[in-house]
Length: 478
Length: 97
Image (cartoon, rainbow over all chains, first blue to last red; front, side, top):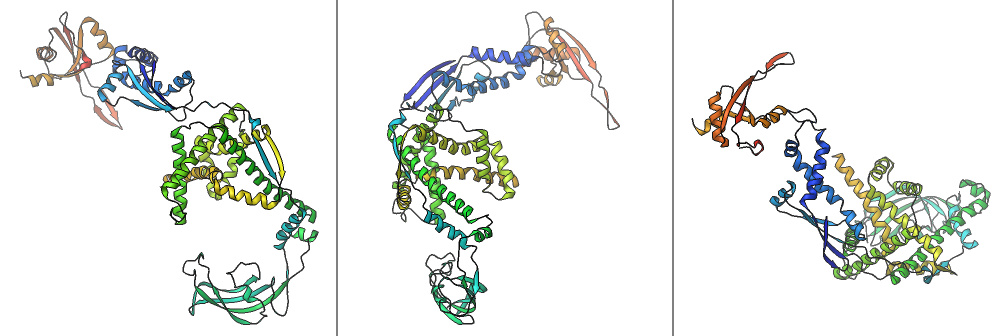
């Protein structure tokens, strides 16, 4: 096998491989020899077929197998050269049928060329140069208390009272909504319970209930907001005929063991503990997100190299599809987003390149550090992702993942990334900085706007796989 | 005899173990028409393959009686011709006509 390099520019490589007819012949003979004792041809007892006849019958198909074998073995060529292809190499052979026929009959040398892009060698730098500040927020007692109250609210009891309804009271009403004097769909209900001040109704509706007594009848005028879910109501003015049946006031709320028990917990302390845990978890995630972003930024700074264009292209397609689909779903155009298509394209192109680059760097780091994703973790993540589907589909989706290594890779990728980040967090210099809640949250939002990259990163990939699953299922169904 | 008749005389080459063995004696085996005579076969082979034939032996392999779902059927008879070629002549059966 002779390998000659015909192109070597940047990351692009093109190789021309020539396999002499003699080599092909030798391989073919081997195969024929192998088949000799097995084939069952008419007119011959097994194993008695003359070689010449066997070759005449099976020669071409065996040769095709030999060719396939050689093509499948191209990986070894690359390993020999010490290069890692970014994508599956593209292999091109002669298009001419006569020539192909000649190759198959063993008269001509087998030639093909393969083009691919290499993953640039990444020299890992010392991580200890990377410094990040991790913003940490301690959950205060007041916040816990507040959250506990909110949780306990659902267990609040009400007591019927006489007199006028006030803010915070629960009112039981019948209502009938009219637009221009005509009742509209979904505008009427009986015995509807409204808690004033919860803002569950259209703005202004609840406020106008204040001051009504049980037995009162009244008319309330409200304007539906412009962006109301039901299009035929949006922006319209409506009148509601109200009949108040009952007014009840909330009982005093106290966080004690009793309320906790109503929520299915042993004691108030336990409730607080759980709520605190949840809050801490929530803030911890934000902290981690921000730390991760800093690391990625730092890596982005540290590793500037040309990313394989094919990969970037693929990633860009991914993003672009996602973006355009989102826009379409929202019924908006680029003009609405105060940008043009070209600008957006450019922006996402940059984004794609960054992602590819970071992805390569992270995988390299992970490989060096021998970060591995265990089977158990995979299983857990798999179950996690499956659980988002309706129960009757879960089994099928599970099967889909089991049989589709590509889909499994999609699940594995984020896990691997998280683990690498964990590894990095241990390696690099991290300074903890106490910040207030607002700082932690507010800052975060700014950054997500500046770089929609991070948030989207995991999402589109994950989404892609299930959709395939659904599509696949459809096919099977029909 | 016309050229066309030659094609009717010779049905196909017989490629079997036995015919392979025969080829070592410079003999070629053909399945031929059931009613073709030895001179006809000789003429046909000589004309179609451009070789010189020194002898023709023929045999008729009778068709077997076969039963399928109780009905009796009979395979057709096949006449074979073992053609001996003159020295220096040969036929490459693989290339066909």
